[in-house]
Each structure stands twice: as structure tokens, then as C-alpha cells.
Amino acid sequence: MLLHTWLPATLRGAGITVVETSGWTGRSHGSLPDKIKVVWHHDASPPGDSPGALNWMISNWSSSSAQVWIDRQGRWHLVGTGVAWHAGKVKSGMPDNFSSIGIETDHTVNESWPAAQLDALRRGTAAIFAKQNCAADWLHFHKTICDPPGRKVDPDGLDLGTERATVAKMIGGGSPSTPTPPTTPTPPKDDNDMADITDAQMNQIADKVLAKLTAKTVRMNTVDGKTGKETATDTAFFAAVGATATDAARAAFRSSNYYQ
Image (cartoon, rainbow, N blue to C red; front, side, top):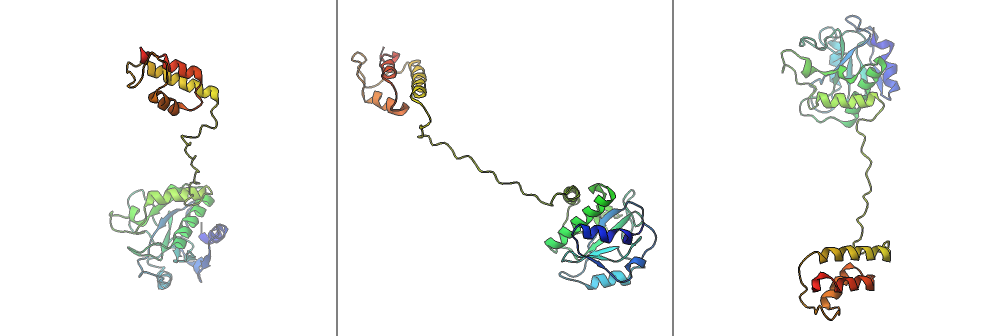
């Protein structure tokens, strides 16, 4: 399989700007399999825009290069259509030059990733996997496949698990980061707002409070239990439970065990 037969249309269908470099459809070291894995790289060019890196890849196709180079604006530059020598020596079982394509990026160690570049890198990779009906675990990094481990550090600043999860969302039609819609908290109920409590409900509340109180053996401090008159303590209690307490509730309080 050769990339020029399907990759440009697939990328453009995903909204990506594609630049087909002169002669790219003739650059190949052999045919690729029908389904290809993807390996992300960075080119270690100087920080900032480095268009010279693309020219280097084209001129060095025969010895060391990759099929794609993505600039900091997110444009995919197509360099070769078939096998490319991008992977070098890899660990056993990892994708190599014959089972994967290499995507180089205009990036280096400790350089921040422009949003447009990173978004295009992810969207393009997701489009390739969607076209092939492959899962996001077909994505690899140069630093995770190289042998011996540690021989490569690219792409710097990215985590493979995180990027696979992001690409997986995009394969399914999602965005790389879908914010959770904010929820509107329910305001707390005003403790003094009893507009929705009926007199009957208030009486029930008062009776329950009285029952709790009469179960105790505490005596009121300033009351003559034989007169049946409300004292300052009584009045404070009824103010606490609500002004709608009925005469029956008040009578029950005055005749309670507090006065025995």
C-alpha cells in the first residue's frame, strides 16, 4: 500500500491542511501493509519555526527520513509515500520501518507545543486509525519503541497513555477535551423561611419537640409549676419553635414533666 492513494483525502476530510511536497509520490523504499501503525517523532530542530528541517528530510530521504512532517501551524507536509527509514532499531514486537509510518514534528526538547500543531497531530492520527478501523493503541512514540530504551527522547513532553486516550476520543467523533457542563447549585434553604409550612405542620413540629423535651429530667429555672403561667423561659421556647404554636401545644408544655 502507498500513502498517496488515500492519505491526502483522509486528512483533508478531517479538516487538516495538507501540503504535498514536490516528488513525494515517488519516494518509497517499498510498499507498506494495508494497515499501518503510527510513530510520533520530533525533529530536534531549533526552537520556533524551522522550515529547514523539512528540506533536510527531503534531501536525506535515502538514508534517514519520515513520511510526514508537521509544522508549528499544524500543516501536514507529505514527504514520502512508502516505507521510510524513520524508526531505527526497535524493541522486539514494536512497530518498525516496514509496519509503521513516522510523523516528524517541528519541535525539540523543552519546547512548548503550539495548540494548532498538537491538535493537528492528534486529529490526523485519529483520521488514519478511523480510516483503517484501528484502535488508538496503534499509536507509538519513538522513545517508547527504541532499542536500547533511552536511546531516543522524542516526542518530548508528551505521555503515550494520555495521547492514546485523546486520540481514542477523536476516533469516536469526540473532541480532545470536552469540558463538563457547569452545574447550577441549588441555593440553601433560608432557615427562617417557613412560608411553605402550614399551621398543622408547625403544630406537629412543636408537639415532637415537646415530646423530646419532656423525656428529659431537667427542670426549668424560673417557673412556678403550679400557676400554669408562661414565664420568660416559656416565651423564649415558643419563639424558637414558631409563633404559630397553638394553645394546645402551649398547654401541653406547661403541664409537662418539667413542672412535676
